[in-house]
Image 1 (spheres, helix red, strand yellow):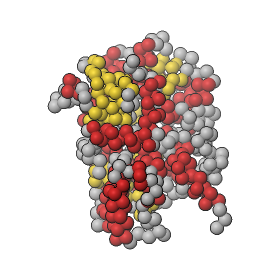
Image 2 (spheres, chains in turn yellow, green):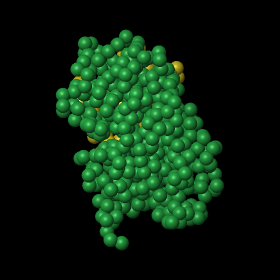
Image 3 (cartoon, rainbow over the protein chains, first blue to last red):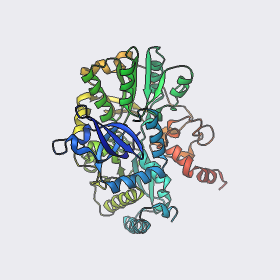
Image 4 (cartoon, chains in turn blue, orange):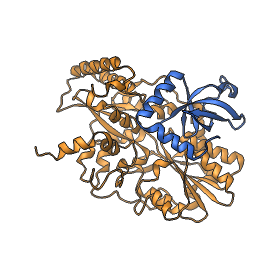
Length: 94
Length: 382
């Protein structure tokens, strides 16, 4: 719940409600992108962003190397697997 | 080095450890009077045990495991409240998985679900809002817990519910904050803390300014840290260097994620929906001033405390189990193995205290990675 998991924004679903689809280690789910959007980084610019996702909300933009390293650490700690199970249970985008 | 092959850069790790050893020598710390460094965040506790960092640092450095695991500090009375809400026949009660196994006085949410309550495990508060949309004749309650890291997600979900006019959705708000328990621990005469490794993802939301009082008022160093083992070693080096040089500052090792002022959109959402409580109850630590938030009156329609007349301050406070020493472990006064229930009555299959429930809890981490060996040596005749 507390640790963010890295994912990549692949699609904007609702530019008004700021809902996008993120790919997290092969699992796709809807995420809210309110916290990474501002005047300097509008919605359309978010596609392709690597982000840190907390309980369905993209909280920070990160670079790809950081994403890869974080995925490795989360896997070693067993946290990634647990997050992916939870994501699949509710709200995986088919 | 024990788990060296798992480090991204083993040579860098060796170098950091050598520097830590060198700097610690200059502090005058000894095994009898080690440097007590508290890692506040449960994610850091888990990483320290997973990578064996506590065994790699010099013996003159002691990790004190802090209260930064939200389910671990959840009082039994709040679990009882959840079950009371969940047992209303019209309610769908939605919760993160982490909270499902925390024991209440009679049962956990998992047991209540087995007994017939409609309790759903969700990954995100947005999934709970989707349940409310899909079940307009039911009342959907989301159990909002966690530190500042999860607050923006529940706040934004409530703002979304308000925008869409979804009235059959509410939050049971039990969010807590990081700075206040640190202050309480610093004020505790039993505690002797020399420095802090600060939480990374909480700080991503709130920035580093909320920790200024630790350096300014208490003269202790704090370094906000990432979660990679190399981040943690780097942060420990930064803390002991401050101690060796007689400095007390807020430093940011995790600058690649944590801006000084936090995330403005996230902070705006938190401020719109929540306001501080006068005080809040923590399992094992008791009541701490201004350490939790509640929903602002303007969002009363989405506040489960008001809808169901339950929650903190409603007289449902219950004492922790008498023989469990969760509070002393939470404060870092004793190691988990010193608790009479550790590994026997209290284990990850049948947790008595919440520290044994979550992978971020000190007891579960100890049990999983270090418990067996330490447990044996604690029992061995001296």
